[in-house]
Length: 229
Length: 189
Image (cartoon, rainbow over all chains, first blue to last red; front, side, top):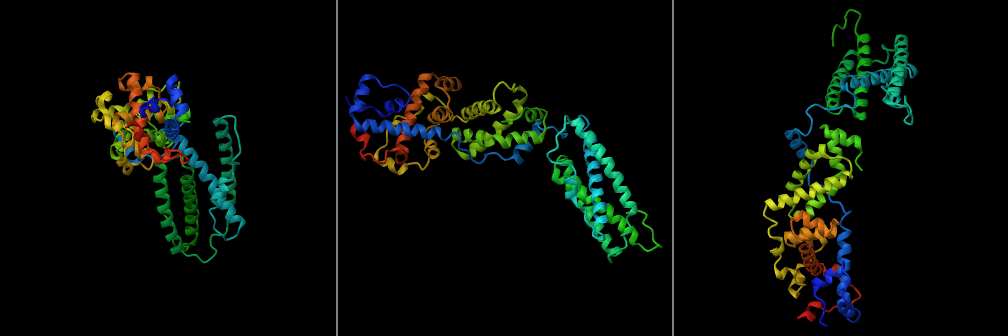
């Protein structure tokens, strides 16, 4: 029998050899070797499947096309039926937590101003579990109220606003910078309202701005009064 | 695996959810498009069409198969349609020229491919499609026949010709290094 053709050898990777082909393969090292090469080729092809490459597409252009097609909703969705209320509640809770931390930090450390955003992050254990989202919201609301009460009490006791030689110009410059930070993080949050990093920066900036505003007012001469900033 | 909440949000047009699906599945989906198309520029254009088609069809996803499988089917189908419209898949039964199916000659040594991806690009579109679908993606000949509108016998014929061609192009990778270096083709002549 002549050698088995390349295409037939390729087929024999999947198919059973006919009796005369099997006889030939048993006797012909060359055809047997060729069949081995075909088997290795097929194994190599199968190994390609899980191999991943960088995507051919990029989200910037794909997202733009999906918006144009109307596949991406024009209005951002949120898990709640009242997304804005949910967003505002989260912000309000964060403000209370961070503001409380700010005041507590100032109270406990003397003249040091420290927005201490990490304190807010550790206020609720990361491992806490709740029976339902409603239960979590209830706990959050209760904690928010307690924090607000404590923050208000500490703020009322705070007498350190005159302290370390910072003057009106310093506070004004700081306020201007904080205004920019608040504005830019707020804009970013409208794009990504659930981003925890953006939320933390926004809330810290708001709290720092409020604290600076109080210090600024306290630093003004008695003859001047801050009407509006 | 895509979770149901992400898919539900994506169906309602939530950009973050759509992007999550894309991030998760683009490497796999784009890979099959790249293999089937060959040309990188055309592959990029077709991959974009594929994703738009997948997201348009999301409301029809019933969840009775894995999202990856469902999206993969759309990707293959859409890619083959795009290739047809580019007239890159014509008469599959006759497209492979006889000489491309032959095992390597000495002159082909210069054409050896570095990887299987490179080698597959050297196949004709019809042979490439059948080889990629069967040997890489795991389709059966019956499934390929249904996708391409050919017989399963035609699919087998294409596949075996493609393998024979690739065996030559990838000789340095598939030859047994311990074997004596003699040309099988020489024995055929």
